[in-house]
Length: 160
Image (tube, rainbow, N blue to C red):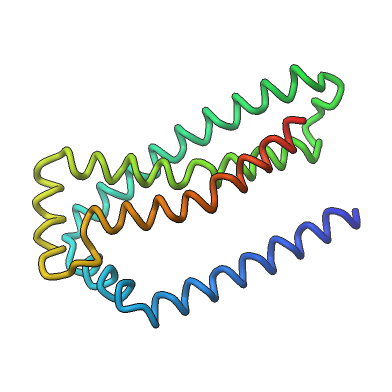
């Protein structure tokens, strides 16, 4: 029980710290302010389509990572397959975060490939160099280079 409480406190502390850092970056960074102006200039239908596409990709990638990792865990440790196993929780948590960046990049690619979405995005990006497809994807890749190794380490720990 003490492990669950300490894990919950750590997750809460990290969440609060990261959200405070991101809030500070959004308010202080000129590039973040440009991206916020871009998002506010997007038509509502584009925002909804892009959100639905991103969530669909995220759920699909999550399930692939989760069930693939779970099957590897079950093949290595068939005794610890009870639903309350901490390893399964770790696998689920890491799979959820591991799918975020690939889903965002896939949704951006699809937004670029579908001509009406690309036109609406380019119109909203006009005059905002920090809000270009290349800059936003570069930022996602940088974020992924930090997040994905952490998720991979958590997945390996959960599988093992």
